[in-house]
Length: 476
Image (cartoon, rainbow, N blue to C red; front, side, top):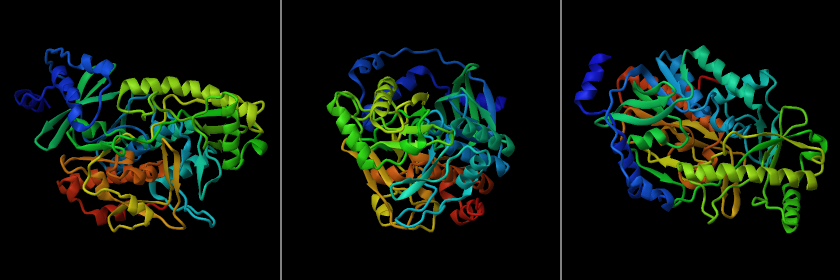
């Protein structure tokens, strides 16, 4: 370890704050616009004295981000025998499923007008079974021409803890990845910060499960943001208690939209008409996916900008109270309901999408294309939240495949991503981003890390047929 540190120091790989901030200033070249109020501040460079960093962990596989993608990836790598470390910024796993309280597993079931059956198995099915065994998930609930299940967030966290512990993966909460150490086209380490201070973690393989491509961007992987910078609108999810479920759930979408429009005419601020009211496994509780956050000028929230996120959190809380007032006044069954819980953070649907070896196209989804290099399948609808409302497209009793190559960037040989950062066109991502597919692509990434290590090859060069045989062996 000491020799590694000495070599890094001689190679001048110790990153100082000035170089990191210069990278931020150069975001213009990557198509990211900076807000005028903090653009000027970024131009003022403070040169911090370079310090030697302690190397606190040296592992086979490092996963950054503990959402569904990261939990699946870490579990897969550790089960394969890799020395695995997962770092997560919160004090629990789940990401958008728990902190964002998205609260539903979308993408498990078939789509179309016929009976809906479970299509997706593997790690997604395994996690679903754990939720069922603990009584922490609803029965399948209709969602357009498919269905979903709603889970209880705290139990989700406990199951993630148990799966990671049983696999042998180590977890480090309350930890941020702030920079990377590169050597040629390979990652050598990730600089982290937590209550212990600034440290370095070295690894042989790296998995970006941040949902925003944070690790990929720091390593220089090209990316895009939505369609010409237009990303899907985020949502502040909340839960209402003391709901008369028999009367409060199952209202037709058109009727809900009519009530929203009538309330808007009376002065309610309700920017979203197409709202989802979903029954929780808790008695008398409803998960409310109803808000829609955009900036004052109508542009979408940039989930990689702290100022935008701050605005979204504050506006989201205001919208929660307004929709609570609307539900109590207008929707039968909610007359005596009360606000039960609000997400710890705004629910992000889309931010950065990496440039990978293959791009999942809109036509791949529309035409239900299959691939002999698939690591996941999906029948979930295209559900794109944007300026004109919510665009929905359902496959009719069919599904499409997500190829392995959507997870693999060209430019860094020992780095892979998964989840909503996979390489995809805008509408295609609006389908592929959901929880079940995050579980599947995450598990594939973790398994690929083991195969890449075993064969001493780049992620791009693993045997995908062998990868598929491993991940398809799980039939939960």
